Every structure is written in C-alpha cells, then in structure tokens.
Image (tube, helix red, strand yellow):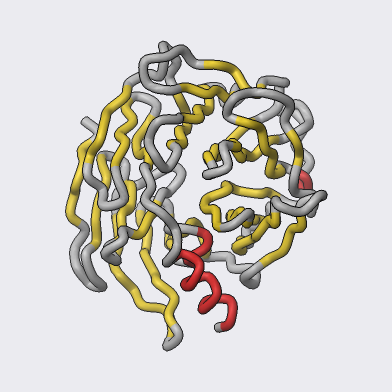
Length: 264
C-alpha cells in the first residue's frame, strides 16, 4: 500500500500531455482529455509503427514500420534518424528533459536470448550517442511516465510476469528498482507512476482494473482486440483506452466504453 500511495501522489503533479493513438495507417494526437488535436498518415514521409509525442505536442519520436529505426520529427520538418544499428527498437517516450527513452535489443534481431531480450536506452531528441540505462535480466516493456528524474516503465521477466519498474536517471549509472511484485495479469497501465493497471483476460478483451486502498475496482471492458494496449487517465479521472478501431473513454466504474475518436 505504501508503493500505491507514493505512486498516486506522484501522478498528481504530472503536467498536461499530448498522446498518440492509432495504427501505422493513421495516428491521432489528442490532449489529456482525449480531444483530437491532429491526424497523421505519415511523419515527414515516414510511416510509423509506434509514435511518442512531447508534452507540448511539438516533438515526435517514431519507430519505423520494420522496428529497426528510431526517428525524430516535428511538424513541417523532415524526419531525422536517431538510432539504427540493426537491433529491435520499441516503445519510444519523450521526457521533459528532451531525451527520448526507448527499448532496444542490442543483439541482432534474429538472435533471441530470452533473459536479455530488451533494455531501456536514452538518446537526445536533437541527436547524439545513445546510452543504455537498465541492466537487470528480462524484457523492459515500455518507458511510460516521468517524474523528477525518475522514469517508470513496465518490466517483464520474459516468462509472462510483469511489474512496474523505476529508473533513477539522475544517478550515474542509473539506479533501477521494482515497485510492484510480479503479476501475470498486468498488461499495461495509464501512467506507470499512477500504478493503474489493465488486465488482459484473453486476446479479444481488455479488463480495466484500478487498484485502490480497499482493493481492485473494475471499471469495465473493451472487447475489441488490440495489439499493444494503450491506456491513460484523464485529469478528471476518466480512463482512455485504445481499441482496434478507435479511442474509447470509460467515465466511471461499470459504465460502457464510449468511442471518442475513430481510426477510420
């Protein structure tokens, strides 16, 4: 419970964000409340497998469709390559300090060592050398949120168990720790610093569960199949969750999801 109280307190200080939702065919950028800001079919001529947006909505970090290139882009400009060395790249995140955090597999994609699948790396959005930050065995699945030189992300052991991890990136080297116990049901969360979990029951359904001091509260389900599930919590407490055909909002526990944005 101490960890939950700490994480909940942290998220209350997080500033406004912009988020990217969608598929390689169409990406939609929204504000914190899920209101559409812009649509993109490409970024300076490049299609993207994954997209991250800076808090002010002016900087983008893209993962190429083959997941081998990390690019930087801003509206009206050309995309610039940040990382491309033959390794698998996933889950970009732009922090307030101007760095892009991402998952990177050092070895060639064809070589899959189960206990060292992916690690958290950092590179400046303006370019320069990339630096590996994490070092513990396992799959590091997605830097998701930031608070005062602390990066929170989903950490997997590559055997189906997940937990929320933290990197103190202000230290040299960065200090890594786990904030929650391994959980086979944890699939994603709104903000890592909020500890809000999404439980995947099967490949066709996402069950949204919010941990509280009195236990887990079930908010509802999104039955559309999704690839990587994305979920965020609005400043007013609603939950945004990505389905296959659009962005949905759940306004309160037990309420049916309502589609806010269509990906068509």
